[in-house]
Image 1 (cartoon, rainbow, N blue to C red):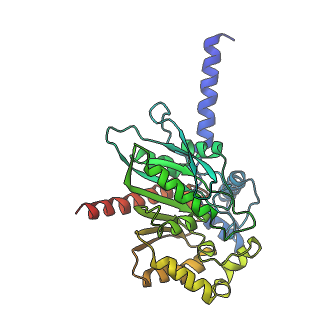
Image 2: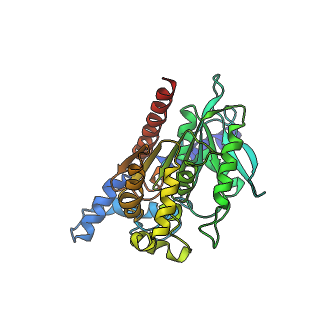
Image 3: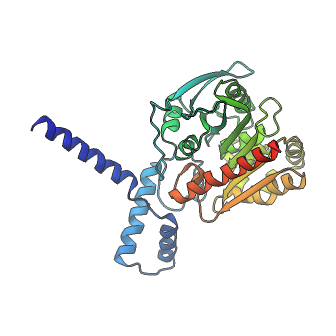
Length: 347
């Protein structure tokens, strides 16, 4: 085969792979409706059955775990996005790293990208993933390149920081991850490209709990907090052991004792910035959040805004098990929230 033919073949294969990865996007709302029809005993047409089968296979491939009802699963930490990122040239916006030391001496490395812009310093998002475990530098660098949410904020003109925190391990009430997060935000504020007065922290699930803690931190002092289905059983000190995780979500009042309530209300009273929540209606965290945490924050007179995404599963704010329009809505509503705060502050 001639060299030119080889090059043509490689190009065709590359385009084919990209098309396979992203063009065949699943409409998860349609898939859920079909699944519900199937459960009711309705016979699906051949096209409907094929579509549902393809959706189940894609979901399974994205998580590497079982298919079926995932309403109590996941924190977005081990899942692969079903939504494409926005590709940004690394010539225009290279992936950089920053090593941070927490107050207790523990070191953490984060990745970040700066948009190509003449206007400096820039507003910044610091993203904290879900789960209880620390991510490797390589994983964070990949997040900076290909996370659907991170890359969309980068394109919108924000510095995008892909951050992590030490593993909770057997101590889910450890303050170590909070110390990491505080140190990261403070270090990010020192970067010459960053507007220290406009650093927003955005966390999902376990990371959502962490950013709620940052809302009351004088050391971190974020401009605003954005959380996707925050793991409030961590924030409220209810999950004293990983083994009670699911029971905490199913029976929050059993674990939300007077001691936990007092500690949580003290945290809430200390909140210093506005908070935006992105929340679905399928994950069991909704019980603790909607019935206990959010009413407590509102009762304390804090600026809390909650957007509900019907039918969405845990991790949708990172582009997991959802569609492009949902991620676009998360990003657009977050930008509207942040920019409205900036205008208010300017006035």
